[in-house]
Length: 416
Image 1 (cartoon, rainbow, N blue to C red):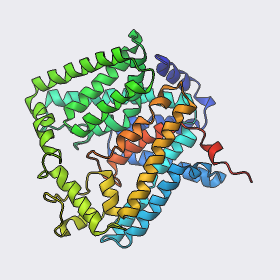
Image 2 (image 1 turned 135 degrees about the vertical axis):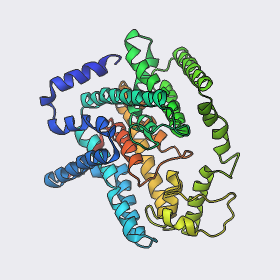
Image 3 (image 1 turned 30 degrees about the vertical axis):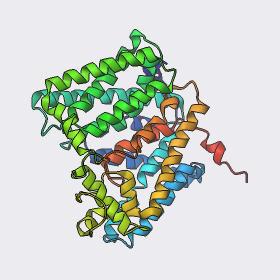
Image 4 (image 1 turned 60 degrees about the vertical axis):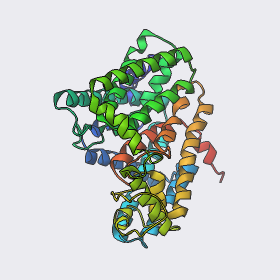
């Protein structure tokens, strides 16, 4: 598989007519480059794929894909969110935010059960992702060396402090797959893969986004153990990464402080007087005060300012959301919603894990479980669970990870 990503992409484009639906596949390949523009074009792109898939299913009366456990619980969570939004402090706004959230699971189902059913299509997307990750990395390196970071953070090309989110989440499938390739055996043909991995990690570090830096480095390290691990090559890569990080921190003192002292100070275990803990604390308090139903999707941005005293240590910090998926589910959809959401996440990870057994020799299938496990890892700062940017990147990667599991129709078939 060392040079097949290039060959597969070339052959896929050359013989695109043999795949169906040809136009939608090409439209899907355009997604990572559309993501480099801004959130609205990216959201329109993803929503169109989800909507076309839904219309296709209605016309063909084909709903086998919806009988998968992960999608069932996504649907249940969606209905529950709409229900609890009615009793929240902002019922209309919460209902609207909750209603449009379903486009993300629908997109993932469309990729898994329609667009990326073929192995060649999946691996062709890896090549597209690698190119987009390199483009984003050069944009960020250019920003860093031309104008420098703003308060230790980079924002090109979005004008928002989240470009590392794109590399760490949307591009995670290609980075972990390439890492598995590089570790399996040392070959000169892997130079492109090494270059993609290191320039991407380097760019994420430059952004100053600590959570995404830790996320993508840890995901890549797990990938070294997921497929034909080679401990000598893994050790060599770790030494190279450590050397690059050390050099970068030596060169940029602000970046070093951000990833050392400031990171240590922001960990709630050592310091409860921090905005990190403050956002989590406010979410926990809102969940405890509205234990069963929560305050409705995105309702926490309103109720946070009306919290009463509680036994939790520290001081509340009121942002637009609690900055943790599980705390946000608890705060906005209550304990019942938290259980449903966790069950959905469990089945997403389980489905990706099962693809390892179905395709034991496939690189992407072997590392696909890392993707949902990483993006849904409990103890991390995260964007809004119902928000736009974070979900655009996250569900893109989840859809590609789920697409490796193709027993869904057999598993859900019910004889008439």
